[in-house]
Picture 1 (cartoon, helix red, strand yellow):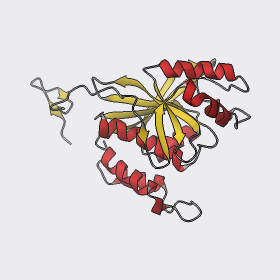
Picture 2 (cartoon, rainbow, N blue to C red; picture 1 turned 90 degrees about the horizontal axis):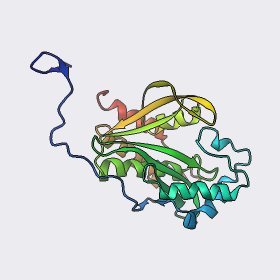
Picture 3 (cartoon, one colour; picture 1 turned 120 degrees about the vertical axis):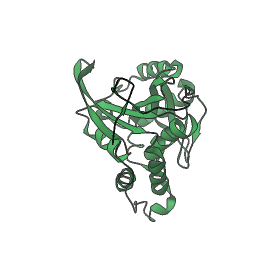
Picture 4 (cartoon, one colour; picture 1 turned 60 degrees about the vertical axis):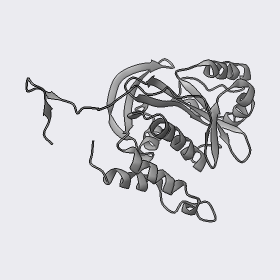
Length: 245
């Protein structure tokens, strides 16, 4: 591909015609088949969420998160959820199961940049009952769909501790592309974090949307709930169908 140049012969990026700043994400619910996402509050979610995360008795789910584990400290947990409730960036959503109405986790949009259409997903906190479920995948799909289909952002980011192998694998499975490593990017819990960066672009989203729709279709699961096609295969095929950006 030949690079564009300006009148001085310097290479420059492609134009983005008609670009306008995008809206900030709102607090309206995102409703799927297995989950709904709604603004995280102490009153509506803290009780069932605390019960759900307490099933992780060893606290391993908190290792790579900025907070926790909370053990039996319900007051400390509620204080954290209260901070989430009033935050605008990050903007937190409770993950509530459609079937039973329990809050099983939460996630947020953060580093929200409407002027340039960039937004990150983070603070992803999934209790044992949410991990490795259709609900967990649909949660991520609903958040992507709002970013690209509803709000019209150009770029969706995923970042994690480079040592967090499950998070890196999840990013890959969900169709994010690895971009690189930021060494000594930050500190948390008194230790260093090298941060791995991943992203999805708006140009990649239509093919990925179709992959998610195919995977989430009830017909993709047999009578025992086993998937017929893996999401990893579908997202890999989605990326293979378009030029690498």
